[in-house]
Image (cartoon, rainbow, N blue to C red; front, side):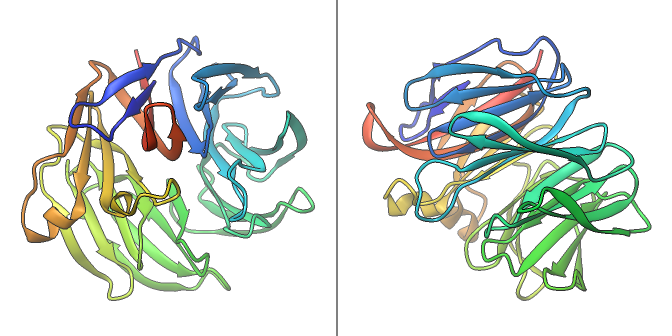
Length: 311
């Protein structure tokens, strides 16, 4: 489903019953969006025309993570990367959506996948308790190391100089050059989602029902939105000024198992507990969230949120 969030009351722009099994992951970049499911397929969408572009059938197991790569000078992503429960990573060209390469990166299912801002490499974490680095130019795994524990989230910061890994309630901040652990953040309860923001801020959500903004430069909590939802937070989106609106720099959206999507102005969170700028009750158990800013017919510049749910 898509939501316009520039008004106090978000409304559904379009909705597709795309999958025949629970949706596990979603990604969006510019006008492109994709959803992955345990039905072993990926579905592609064009947000600008509110159209479904159909499925990709190249898989033998559930899709566990999706990520677009969009070069800084392009408005449309160049590649789509997917990770699967059989430990494989697939690379697609987006014009058109054709499979370029599929290779095994882990012995067990991949939990999460992150593409470096350069588009040349990706990091993945798996149920095998390993961190792997893949060379996307050659389409093969180039490095793998045991972590001693299973990580469920991996994300690059905006510069690509650092990356984070989350395991249960712990968040490790690592130097990208050699994967050296710089410091560890303690969220007290399990982290279920994370999204990098501006100036070294990392937003996390999870079992504690709150949104926490970590300053990864000082290794301390910058601010937090306590009890942002009544149940666990399953997705966070940090909206950017890609559409040309400076106010988007301060907007963060969250999705929860309670079925609510909420949009927050983080400037208000710094001063105290804010009220959400906008809220939509999807009446579904939400599993993931992605967002994109693009120009559309509804306004000169509007932000679009994509959410997927288990039914």
